[in-house]
Length: 110
Length: 114
Image (cartoon, rainbow over all chains, first blue to last red; front, side, top):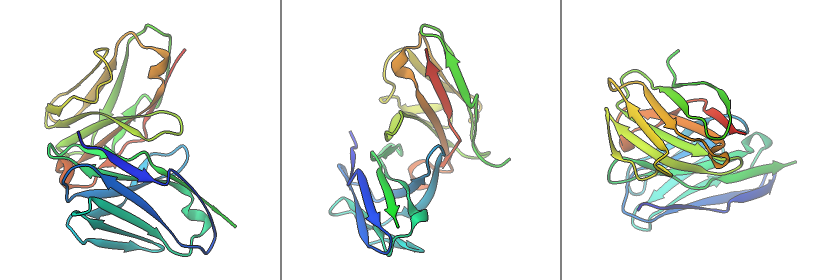
């Protein structure tokens, strides 16, 4: 069974600092997605990574995928308060099902 | 609207009653997923449909849970004899091509079993 692990689960950052969220998964896959969820809201797509070495950037967020290591990272640069949210990674399995990590709850403090 | 819709948005039911949750995916999306999210928790995979068939039912927590999809469109998730531990937000998502495409999520149905 495909398992997806994220760490850390909770992250408190100061504004202006950098940090990385890690997403490890258990089987071979070259399809990985990052989503954001604000409190009380549903999930919205951030990044789609569909090949080894893929890197995507949007504003202060950058995501990368290493399929050989079965690892994706979400790097936060110079954090600002409006990045506070829960971030999920999701991996597509052989059956095209999608399994999610437990989420990283990010809080950016002034 | 062009997004995924779910109904009802909120449902309060008594323990032991049956409930039916509905998901209307984005038109043309062949893949449909159901997830469950308990308060402050991650997403628990329940079931995945490709068209009307469900290649993976492994996530359904018990035989009280069932789901169907008709016409490659609307899906219903049915929970029989609800228990308090069934209380959660049930999220539906659809995508164009299963794991090869972004999933778009509905707003969820908040189920409370009293």
